Image: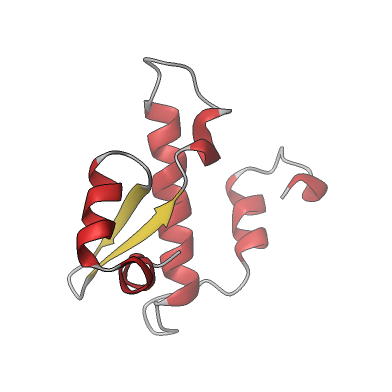
Length: 100
């Protein structure tokens, strides 16, 4: 979810407290125009990682945030992502289409 929507629903104080204690994971996408945050549940990625091996999980979170930004906020001039499934398939041709 877009973090400003979550902040509006919860209120700024509760939002800050929940993010600070790790109730939510906040991912951020930055470019010269803006910085945008997205909120996920920490449990969304735990099943894919092991303790002390956070790099692949962090990479997956960064990819998810970037794809979400490209789909929801980027314009066509900047490279709006309109076919995320095709993009993921091109990035990893070994993944079958039924898993995307």
